[in-house]
Image (cartoon, rainbow over all chains, first blue to last red):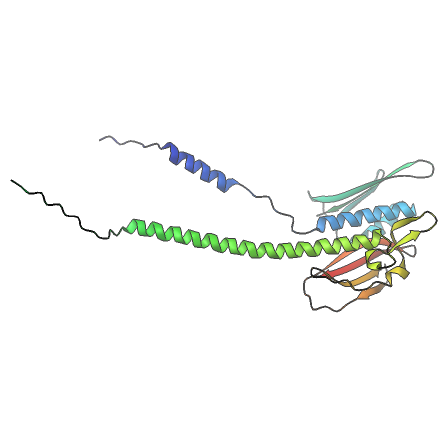
Length: 114
Length: 155
């Protein structure tokens, strides 16, 4: 009697099916609205700066640090940028484009790093 | 001449490997049911926490975006009578002072306060036995100064 290999097609298909089930990754479900809360605060700040029409980077930095204490962030007004903390891959960012009375464009962006 | 005697005895066949396989199957079923029960418990808690987030975020949004003299918890933004529109993110302090309790099965308002750079003013506070609470902050203008509107809710 010769030694041989028994190849079963249905057993192979079952193994492949089982491997497929094990490899399925269910994406994590958002359990809270923390991201939305941060986004809303960023937009609140942008709105208030637009109302006050004050775009001094130093004052905006103070306002931002008051609104978001102890976070890593980047704040930019046109080409000028301020960065604090540690940059990570995940961030929540908002941007505003404002036109003053002389139609000069001012772009303000804020990013909070998670 | 031989007589073939047929015997048919009823009996039990005890198979050790089948027994082991059966125990393994029962064990797997037990683990699966326990995991499902734990999953259900966690989902119920997650759902409750999410409801709290949802209600607190939406109430905070309502206060800063709307103007509601009858129920200032639903809107305390300044109303510009000249332009006939609500000035969102600008708080009418007199309206906010009239804030009153809101409570239903799912949500109870605990505290509303304004935090300035150098001070804090509480507009509404209620003692509650509920332990699951959450505070949401929004940025507003109050009397021309930037402030954090802090709204705390519980369920």
